Image (tube, rainbow over all chains, first blue to last red):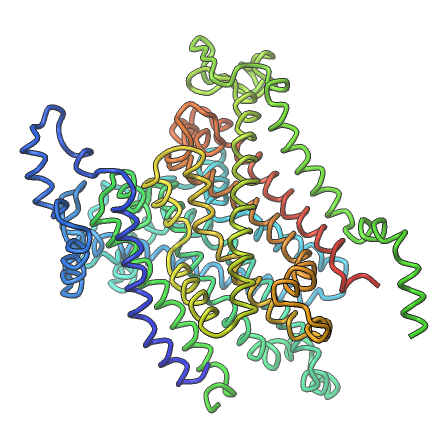
Length: 335
Length: 295
């Protein structure tokens, strides 16, 4: 991607977000389902219900509601959650770091696993054992993250009870941290006891999220490595007497990385989307878990805020990936 | 030219056989697993040893028959209400198969129609459909289907609608790109030269060449549809409460996972078998149908 293309993509961000906002907003209001009905105590009077509707602005025409909400969002105000009765922005800011930390940890695990598997596969290229690597990769790809979450929960939480299966950290631990980025802050502050306790809880959900993505990285990287290794420059280096591992690591790997990042990077969004269920399965307090509660409670302002947050994350991720590819690939940098 | 003529005469009688051979063990294993799933769904009342809703609180949370404390009457044990796990697993296949068939077919129909439109017309039609796909893809698919299913309300129709509305893009994107590729081929140009209209060109020439791709996509989509149904019923917004589904069994099993892990483990095994079966089947069919691999 060239710089001009990048600018074009940036210009398209606001309309895409606007489209997402319109779809969510209309979707939630056109179809039946009443959040007020969920929060009133039995026997509330008509007047009380009316007052509640007016409080949340639900008595106005849809267009009016949308204009009001859009104006508020533009000034950083996402409204008040109906079910939790807190400001949506506060809820998002409190929970988002948990999800970001989980997704980052999962991505790191996936990249390490994927690169190791791809290198192992390429070293075994042409031998019998290659199909073991390929078969393993195919198996990991066919099973989605939430099933891995359930399998890991059963294996390492129940059958061999090594790890905890719910929450972000043990409630009795005194955190006393300034931000909600518990893991990052505790590592930076050198409080490794807390970091270890956090990792203890995060490792199962993170691995569940990482496995299908690792398989994807491995498959893409292995194919790119195979292709790059057959190029003339690699053959020449081989003829000059460099060892195969040496060539793979220093000559072939940097070139194989570009298509892998380009194709695989976009799939990080899938990993991010996977947090919704994996957080639910492990009762992890991130925005994914909150999203399911919000939907079940028909908490319109919270759902809107959450979907918009996810959309922003998705779009941002896509842009970052394009940026990284542009920086990695000299042909695109000067193109 | 003579060579081509000879091979094309020689192929027809063995084409089906050659195709089946090309599919290889993937095709056979996949077909067997898919057949198992479909048969379980169709003959559920005959296969299930118990009524899936029948409660027997006296024998709740029994382990599978081969474990200590298990009873031969309940081969795979019972859940916390004393319902037969095996029967519930078999009846759950019905929901899974229904959702897979209907949702995948509808998503394919919409996606193929829009993909063909975008790929063949180009211009503003392509721009419009492509932008629509972009906006769609900015949603996390899982979250979107949960939101959809929740707002439409419980029931099989809403699950299917949620899957179709979310997943038509999978077909539209691929079909659009492939249509564009096929239209640049010589045979498409030749068809245009002999005066086929755009509709006829798409129907008679392009669409048949998309079939191998479409079959694979369809099989994969059926697997995805089964998974989405599992997700929705796990979250508790799928079909009505008393219909057994793999997802709701997992959700119930999660509550008592330390006491009765098999309640959660067994539906997971069913889901994985079905999804892998569908993937293998689709993959095998693609190899069997793909004209490029016909030699």
